[in-house]
Image (cartoon, rainbow, N blue to C red; front, side, top):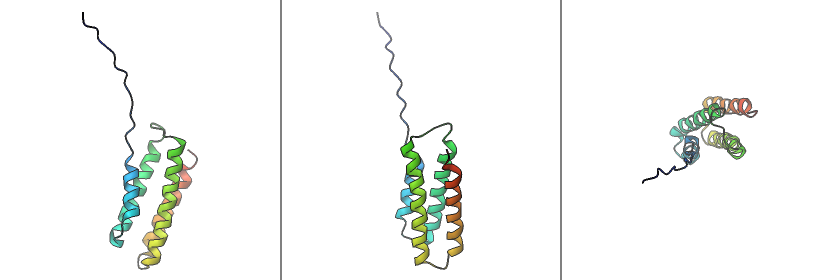
Length: 107
């Protein structure tokens, strides 16, 4: 007689795409690609925040998200010092990041 053995289902959370997008933005050395990478990283972080109610993360992940936003702001300021012809885009991107942090820091 063959017994059917139940295998417990283990839920493994896949890493969120914001990790890779964030790292890519910080590594980007081409000034022409930098803003695009930062904007993409911001959008993936915002997407992760929007998923929080249905897919809550840990307090450590929330802290990491907030630190990543701060790091992106610092990197944008450094880039702005090196490339003053795009200050308006950088100011707009920084404002977007800061707004995102204010909205989601109370999750």
